[in-house]
Amino acid sequence: MLTSCKGKTALVTGASKGIGKGIARVFAAQGANVALVSRSLAGAEEAAAEIREAGGSALAFEGDVADPASMRRVAADVAEAFSGIDILCANAGIFPSSTIENMTGEDWDRVMNTNARGTLFSLQACLPYLREAEYGRVVVISSITGPVTGYAGWSHYGASKAAQLGFMRSAALELAPYGITINAVMPGNIRTEGLEGMGAEYIQAMASSIPLKQLGEVEDIAYAALFLASKEARFITGQTIVVDGGQILPESLDAMG
Ligand code: NAP
Image (tube, rainbow, N blue to C red; front, side):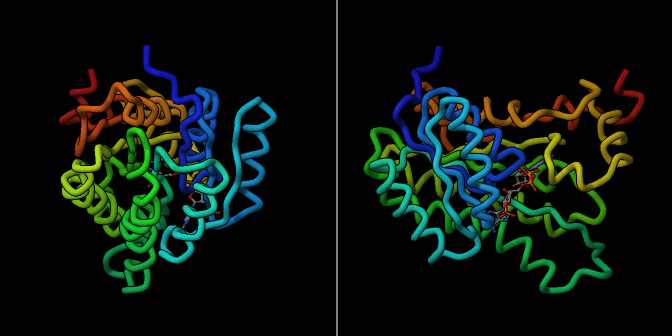
């Protein structure tokens, strides 16, 4: 049994939909105050309203993780609204595709700015408040794509997701003196609005390449994040948890059995 996160405040980036919304829902159900951040305030408001209707404590904030000033403003507003920040879930991310032949510098920068720099700016903005927390927790949502696997058309995305992990390992050392831990969840293919946009054919192909024969649900990622954010995970830092239904395991299609 994990110590309840009742009364703790969790700032979740990219929480208007998908995995971020799932994380916010699960943390709120466990009693946390959740701050849902996305560029679209309307989207974050809608997700926060759903959580409040279910009895949770949730507020929406408009913020762009690629913009340090925006994230500083959001963190200050969240800390004021909920008297501090205990947990940061750095989840916001984008995954447009582009072949290497067609990729422009702007394509590369857009993905890096959100996924990699966004992780830095989110942490920088929350750090003063996490330092004040009883036990600060940072959970980064990376991916299997990049750190472990590859996918033609997503080289910039894979680079950004690997960058998050490289960042995390050094960050763990910088944050340790403050008693703050930072860990990452590496999702496989999770059914989200963003992934649905890849089309039915993609989703079908993915499901058949996963040993558990289905895509993951946002809650599968949220519960891994909840554990890493718990009091009981106090001695774990700079580590990763793959949540992928076994997708990275088979050496070949025959190996699937
Ligand atoms: P999604 O359904 O497309 O949702 C993305 C969320 O991020 C939205 O709330 C979006 O809202 C927000 N966002 C995007 N850019 C932002 C920015 N610059 N600042 C603040 N918020 C921003 O995506 P998802 O599938 O849930 O993915 C979430 C995370 O999980 C990403 O980091 C992704 O790389 C990772 N992941 C997902 C999968 C998967 O299978 N779904 C697998 C591996 C890893 P706005 O557009 O309003 O800002």
